Structures are given as structure tokens and as C-alpha cells.
Length: 151
Image (cartoon, rainbow, N blue to C red):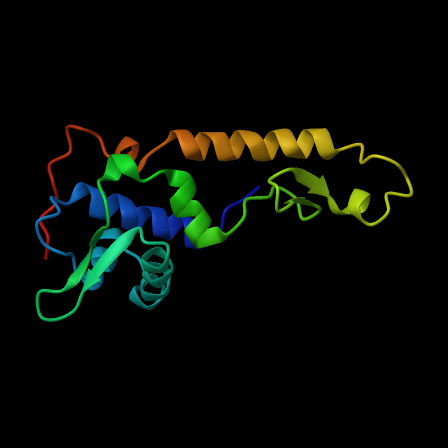
């Protein structure tokens, strides 16, 4: 499974914000320049992060973005879900409203019986989700890192 650039770039934005001291919002242009990422794409990504209430924004000359809560309180599962949506290693596996994982082939009548690969893909999906849930944004920031200067 490969995550898209939405997750890759969005996590980099969040890590950049986590590495800042948080006293001032950080201009998105400053993040784009520091991380070598396209500003127009980041504008789209931070809107997703803002809707998920992971970042706050402030307008004006000293505006920008900041984390909505401490980095240790933001799981990577929240970040990736805000950017990518539901995590599924293959298209045929999805979550029912009750949270159980189902195979679309089984749901569509399952004439051929249980899906022989469902166990594999549900375990892969579970491992990915568990890893993302166990990691927080603060895990990505080395403690020895000097806080970046907000611009």
C-alpha cells in the first residue's frame, strides 16, 4: 500500500508546526519554502487539516497556522484520516458502520464463499491503523531538535 502525497506532505506540514514553538502562527509560505513543497497544494491540505480540527488558522499580517492542540495529543491516525480518508490496503476491504471489516465480494452475495484473502488484508489494515494510532505527532520530532523560528 502506498499513501499519496496528501499524507506525505500533510504529515510534513504537521511535523513542521510541531517543531515550532507555537507562540506565533506559521505562514504557509514559510512552511512551503522550508520543506520544499508546493504552496498551492499545501493550501488544499491545510483546509482538510483545519476541517478535522487539527490546525488553527489566523488571518492577517501575522497570520498563519498552528496546531490546535499539543503535538502529543494528535495521533498520526487522525492526521492520515483527515488527509486520506479511510485506510484500506485493497479496494474490496472496507469498514461497516459498526466498525467491522468486510469484503465487498462477500457483501455482494459471496456466491464463491468467504474471501480467501480477507484475513490477510484485514490484518494488514489493522497493523497500519494500530501503528498510526500509537504514534503521535510528538513522536516525529526529536527532543534534541531546536524549535524552528516562526515566521
